[in-house]
Amino acid sequence: MKQEMMTIVSQQQLAPRIYEMVLTGKLVEQMHNPGQFIHIRVPRADLLLRRPISINQIDREKATCTIIYRIEGDGTKFFAELEAGDQLDVMGPLGNGFDLSGLKQGDTAFIVGGGIGVPPLYELSKQLTKKGVQVIHFLGFASKEFVYYAEEFQALGDTRFSTDDGSFGLQGNVGNLLLATQEKTTAVFACGNNGLLKTVEQLYGEVGNVQLSLESRMACGMGACYACVCHVADEPSKSVKVCDDGPVFQAGEVVF
Ligand SMILES: Cc1cc2nc3c(=O)[nH]c(=O)nc-3n(C[C@H](O)[C@H](O)[C@H](O)COP(=O)(O)OP(=O)(O)OC[C@H]3O[C@@H](n4cnc5c(N)ncnc54)[C@H](O)[C@@H]3O)c2cc1C
Ligand code: FES
Image 1 (cartoon, rainbow, N blue to C red):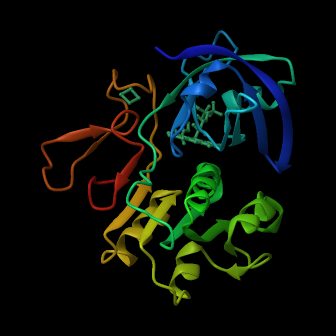
Image 2 (tube, rainbow, N blue to C red):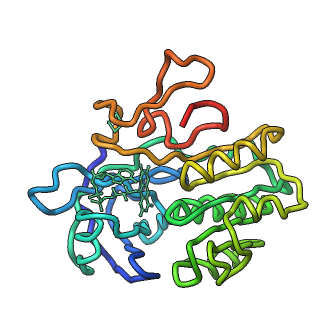
């Protein structure tokens, strides 16, 4: 079991209810694959279940990893009250992340995210650009005040934004952004709500490599409790666990 008390290096608010936390510890040595997540215990006796949060950035030289999370309920509210020097009980890295092996220098990748699905796409984009892949980001947020990491993504490649109210980028959702796109791509990587993932699945049926990161309610986070199962598309009697077999699946592989 990969588990450790990691130390908070820094914590800052990026947007309303959205925080970036940098953690340090030996677990960082195991972190390689974008799209994996860590499972964090809330240091409060009445909150028993760990909270799954995607790895946003890995810096092995500094032995740090970054997460970005949105306050949803008691657990994430508690995380937001912690300060540099505090410790968190972390399990991970867990799950199977994005598979970059099918891409080579000169290929193009569409990177598609919405809201709190955006964080893991940053480490993904960093690793793809390092390989010489040309990335195009399509990022959707509720409105301008909720946009974060705009400059960070722009520094890696072409970045297009949509907001529900049109206050930043195109008005509408990420699907509208994708429909307005002329370019062709080798692969598509997406993380966001089920509506966004379904749109990507429908639009890019002809692209051979479309990887979707699913969000599911989790308990154990490591394949033991069956809280996160979904059915295999071609064999409805078969199921997979999002925490252990995913959270990243090829489009068409599972029903969500
Ligand atoms: C693989 C994966 C990666 C994720 N990455 C991120 C991320 O990078 N940033 C981010 O802000 N959020 C992320 N989430 C969602 C995040 O786990 C939930 O928002 C968080 O657990 C809510 O906890 P809470 O105590 O604040 O809310 P509560 O609603 O009080 O949580 C109650 C219980 O439900 C579970 N739960 C609630 N919402 C979710 C959810 N959407 N997914 C899974 N379990 C949930 C909690 O873990 C907890 O056990 C991710 C979820 C998954 C499955
Ligand atoms: S959360 Fe327990 S099996 Fe996935």
